[in-house]
Length: 74
Image (cartoon, rainbow, N blue to C red; front, side, top):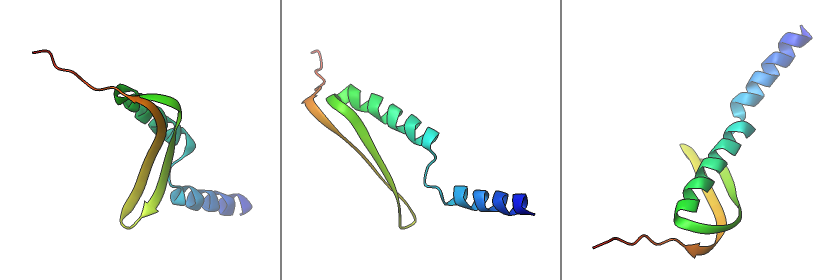
């Protein structure tokens, strides 16, 4: 009986979870690579995810020392 109860508690806790750690790290890695396309970053990115009305609020922040502007050949 204790095992069933603990399993139920674990399922309910996981259901409340915003984003598990492996998924968070994968998203942070992918967003960081994308940011490198447009900025010269200094240090790591910070990824914050919070529940908001009807969804989530997602914030990615990092320090950049330079913007990589694109130039077109004419």
